[in-house]
Amino acid sequence: MKKIRLYNILLPIWILYFFPPIIFPTMIGNFIIDYLVLHFALPDDQKAKDYILPTFLLGYLSDFIGATFLSLIAFGFSSSDFINDFMYDPLASPKTIFPLILGIALSGFCIYRLNYRWFLKKNLPKQSAKKTALVLAIFTAPYTFLIPGKLFF
Picture (cartoon, rainbow, N blue to C red):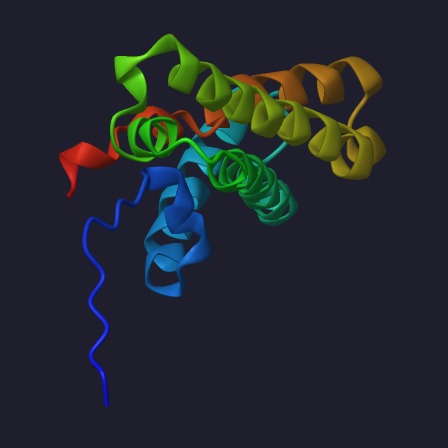
């Protein structure tokens, strides 16, 4: 049987959303951050514990959407230089950082839209729902997408 060796496998931080061993630590981190943001963003008479589970699930889904978008970009390019920079050191070039910013913006938009439409609008006054959804989108967007893979590999 012939041995297969894989050399130079580069793994960006955003692709870790797809690997089961990493899902649990990222879920715990997201849960804590979502709870803290909810605690400070909700009106005084509302309790974060009443809103955390749907907010957390919608936020994690939004992060996954952003990571999927970045994966499609990474695997859609045939230039090995672009792929190498995009996966390993995306902050080194404007052409590689721009898609990351788009991925973060897409996730942030999904966080706002999903939380407002599917959950907060039904449970809070309209203005409070919009404010809370916006605060969640800004403070819980996956800025970890900007962490270069070269720091870990």
